[in-house]
Amino acid sequence: MIFATCLNCIDGRAQLPVIDWIKKNYGVEYVDMITDAGMDGKLSGDYNYMDSLYDKIEISVSIHKSDCIFIVGHHDCAGNPVDDDTHRKQIILAAENLSKYGFPVTITGLWLSSEWIIEEIIKK
Ligand SMILES: [Zn+2]
Image (tube, rainbow, N blue to C red; front, side):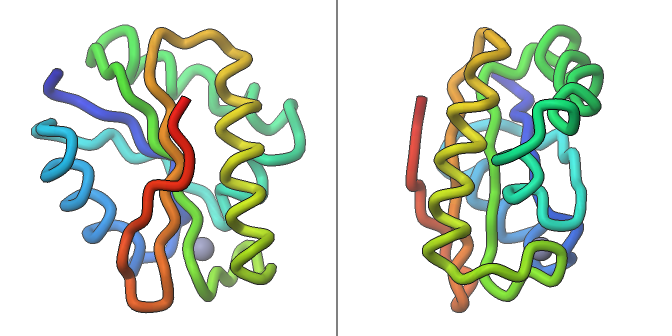
């Protein structure tokens, strides 16, 4: 596997730590990054929203042969200003929602703490 797929916030602080962590821990060379403000919150709720990302995920999985998708939530998120516990619940729910699409991938939820330390909180 050369590529992984990541659904992340737009927040510039959340890019390099996540890319570096995924490359180091999953042995991939590139991370296809799909971003939106408060991505974890959006993915945890509205299926219409997830549908809107389908084509982007499909390109990463089918053409780049990514077999793992990461969903990221982070502390101090301007796009999804909820408390950290709520972020964690949303990341888990987002992973469950995404798994219903049937992509042949492992789905992993990552939490980025106030110290920008990454914690794996769900894997499906
Ligand atoms: Zn954010």
